[in-house]
Length: 218
Length: 242
Image 1 (tube, each protein chain N blue to C red):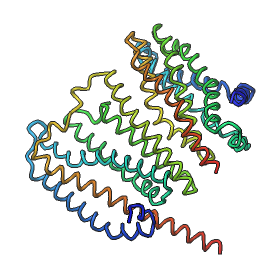
Image 2: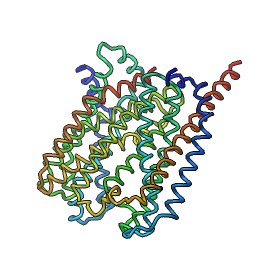
Image 3: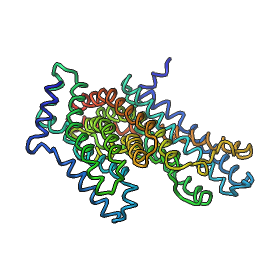
């Protein structure tokens, strides 16, 4: 499992691995959002926590179709199904790799992008923490979606249609943590719910994703 | 004699063919009675005037929008556990009916909301969760279309339906939370049950019964059409091979 995780990380970090695209995308969408709304700093500061969450979510979505597709095309995935570790563990390891290369960097650069959106200073920590706690759920749900649309024509489009509604609860709790933290309200309840959602997704969705992979590889 | 006998497409076909006219007939009768009674023989509400009468479409369609998804969930589980094709096809046939029910509930809600709340749309928890349900239906139907192999499609959509159900329930509560976090929805969360007096309630029951039967009739019809399509495809393949 560790070997698989390291392999995926290496592939992602090497040239052409696509690492950094998500962050670049995150950066550009955030800037476009500012252009679209206008340079009203009061308004931007108000919507910054939620806006950063939506942009991070879209950036996360962007890299999902690579999660299984490359291994599916060259047959690695077929070999992984007969590997000594269960397919659920394969899914889990690959989702972790996706999180380390996408979710974690997104959480790290989000406060930086907060500067552009005039995020109040109290918000930096909470935007970072909420993304840190919420992005594992995004990666795991995304892995399920990627497994579902594996090998389909126009799979990428279908992937977003299927995955985005599944992202709703995570987005609501995550953005709520960021928003409440920014205005100095109590964040405990949404934060706990967000963490619960992430842990729940990590515990249960590998089974669903692996089941779907088995169907698709039949 | 068990219920599972009707998992056999031939037996299902015979039975559904026999009961379909009855279900359709009763559905039409209930809807006619409920809607006619409701529209022309109930008084106007003292607060809402005649707009209250949209309740005879709004409430039953909203009810069936949720129950149709629930039926799809049960049918998907039966398909995954017992591999009865009729079950998977019934789930497939229920989705378009469910999505239309959701759409009717949303549209009649907007028409009702405009004069009452002064807005077509509000980010009220109920409204929002229906919109999310609508998206789930669309995703489910797109998934059926995207996969060529019918058994693979049935498997994938079944798993999607189960995972989607969990997330739909999560969204329902998350949306509640989100709304309370933003603003108090007291003026919007019109608790319909409390306001319904007997004069409105009795025709509403007919109308709900009519919608339930209508849903059954449409699902039976859709499932029969799907079975016929399967047969046609099988025949085409056989002749193609010969």
